[in-house]
Amino acid sequence: MSDRSARTPFSNIDAYWLHIDEPVNPMVITTLWGFDQPIAFDDLRRIVRERLLVFERFRQRMVEPRGDGRPYWELAPDFELSAHLHHIALPGEGTQADLRDLVSDLLSATLDRARPLWQMYLVDRCGTGCALIMRLHHCLADGMALSHMLLGMTDEGAARAAARQRENHHAPRSPLALISDVARVADHALHEGWELISHPDQLLKLGLNSAGAAGKLVLMGPDPQTPLKGPLSAAKRAAWTGPVPLADVKAAGKVTGATINDVLLAAVSGALGRYLRGRGVNVSDMTIRAVVPVNLLPPGALPDGGNHFGLIFVSLPIGVTDVVERVARIHAETSAIKRSPEAVIAFGLMEAMGAAPVEVERFGVDIFAAKASVVITNVPGPREPYSLAGQTIRRAMFWVPTARLGLGISILSYNGQVQLGILADAGLAPDPERIAVAFHQEMDEYIALARQVGAA
Image 1 (spheres, rainbow, N blue to C red):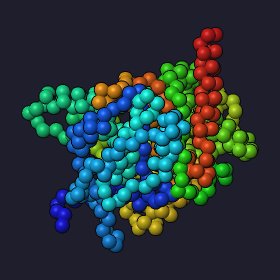
Image 2: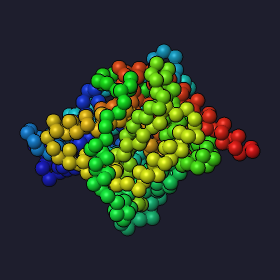
Image 3: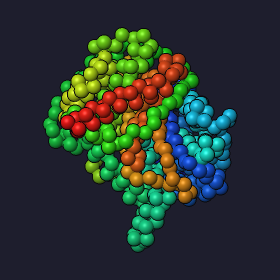
Image 4: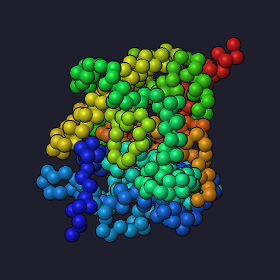
């Protein structure tokens, strides 16, 4: 029998993300790193043991007591790394299409709840190189915390951790503290990346009307009915864009008087408009909503696992074809949201639902899902290239779980580039690669505008 003193109870918010997981809605964050050269599986196994398993959560399983007891974590008595770390190869010629099919299959799969809730796949025959695909349940931590932990596996993360350990050998440090330098890299990127991030202490200082924000969430009507809305299937489809230089996005924001984030949201809005028009939908004057996660950790705080974010709803003017007008509308709305406690209110609602019976919780999730059509999230990565087992990470992307919605778009900045990962329900949007193409068409317009104004 397990030692009860070793049990770590779930927080209400982590229980929320656990309970809404189901076959048609896997609450799993999937990350992919691409390499131009192969990595030896033995080297990866050693790295995972030395750098990832220092986080106890990766050796713990989830336990749900009978009845209404709170779920808790306990060390898995039969933990075997081989059950989580796999070595596979792409079929066929190892093309991007083959890799996309593999990612789609993995996105459609749930994780075994009898084991620690993560899986990792070293994929050979990706062109001349390989890929590392990591799948981690959302109840382990949010995207920012998981990003910090995974960066701790890299050669740079390990070197920084070792340096800090030498500097502070007189005081024992936690594994997460040992990679704080890596975390600061991501934190430093925030001010140029995801500018919707706000903090509860700042919101409270504003003295704004929380009741008004709560009323907005509760009274908000359902989103328009489009092919993106409907019953979910168990099959998911993956797509991704090519990289876009972050400098070009920044230049587009400068000439339009908007932030980098505003430009990216405007480009996504235009891409969804193009996609729906291509499916015969009249999107004139149509606006749909995106659910956007917002970090709620205090300024300067490092994530320690768990989930520490709220949600906001951002209107996407997909029917506006003028790129300047579209980004202006988004900039006006995001500026207003920054002064609102909406994210904090949403966090409180999710925490309350996490403490409620599962049936009530899922009813609440359905209410949230009815008010939006897409999840859009962003995790800023390092500005310089990182490596693993001596091989440079050339490409990095991730896919966010969609929480009862049919479409999720994940934005990742890494090494001066921005790339989108797109997760779509196969029954609603079976061809997400068309959204990726449309995003590049929209970004081309913003980049051309920036260059035209710059040359004038």
